[in-house]
Length: 97
Image 1 (cartoon, rainbow, N blue to C red):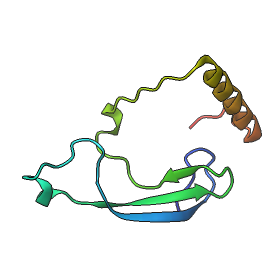
Image 2 (cartoon, rainbow, N blue to C red; image 1 turned 90 degrees about the vertical axis):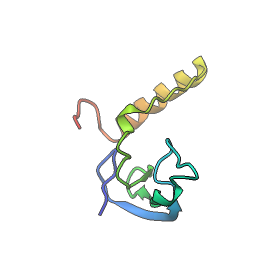
Image 3 (tube, helix red, strand yellow; image 1 turned 45 degrees about the vertical axis):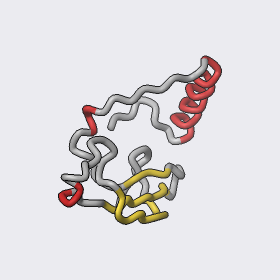
């Protein structure tokens, strides 16, 4: 059974999405489409904290992907407060890995 990435509890299968692109970068061209291998996305939810997540292995280039977001000062303040509550609720302060 898959364990939650946040709290380590068991997850519950929610949805399987077959025949999805195997990567979100480097989509195949017409010439390479026949070499592409689709994948099934397995979406699960944590039975304890409720986090919805994929239980698939990450793509080989996941550490090289650049993610950029922009948020307002109000949203940043809200998210920090939300994260502090989450850490408090699941007693995650000073815990590793």
